[in-house]
View 1 (cartoon, helix red, strand yellow):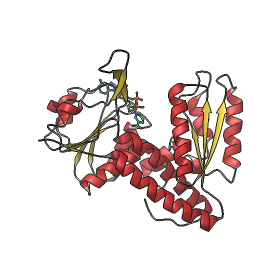
View 2 (spheres, rainbow, N blue to C red):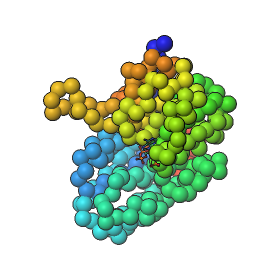
View 3 (cartoon, rainbow, N blue to C red):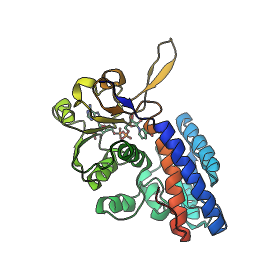
View 4 (cartoon, rainbow, N blue to C red):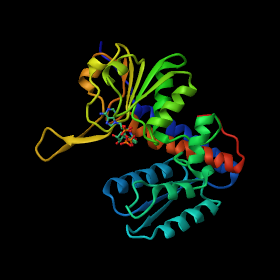
Length: 295
Ligand code: NDP
């Protein structure tokens, strides 16, 4: 069997187009653009790239982008004051504080300062609780994107066996909640799980969010399973001194057994930014009382 490759890049482009259409309609109805504020503390090169691409994508979707760059040695109180100001700013619908923060800052405290109704990353305790109890809130962008890809491929997920490998607050746990909400039978695996390959082999749906290159191999999979690879791992490339990105799933062996699989890059990655734009649009619509179409 050769698995179908799930084209997250194409799906994300379509999603961004839909967000753009509704962002224009929002502007016409509300008399202002939807706005996303992104806060970057320090000079972490990967974070700088993420923040730049988020800003560019926000503008392309017809929304306002507010970038705030603070020096790495900024006192925590100054960051908290900025978040408070953004909470109070009517032009800002979504607030994203790029992680990781420098070691002298308490990430949980900073996230807790974000107004849950502007928390488009879905990282606040309030939004985690809303997800867990079935209330409307904001769902973290990466698992939301994974769910969209799964529903697009499989339709109704009810009754399917799903294994999520990884239990982080930003990917594994919210992914498990979303799959449970879709009436899957969900197993959450982690570093202490026994016989992980046997656990994964039961799954119709496998979501790998571990951070270990090519850990999940084809012989771990049930034939025909749908595999979502969240992992982004940089490993040495074919040429000396060059690196390349690989996922947590060994694509060559997995694609001979799975029914469908996301590639890395080009699978889950592009969905994360598209879902951030989607969440920002929804935040704007909710705050302004403007109705949109569900996307
Ligand atoms: P974390 O490091 O926070 O969590 C990793 C999880 O994997 C933990 O729950 C850990 O278990 C589990 N784990 C570690 N080793 C094993 C093992 N040998 N067997 C089973 N489980 C194991 O990572 P994140 O959730 O933040 O990210 C996971 C991956 O997804 C990373 O590669 C990251 O780069 C990528 N990522 C990609 C995004 C995208 O946009 N595509 C966005 C966010 C993340 P335990 O809890 O027991 O320690």
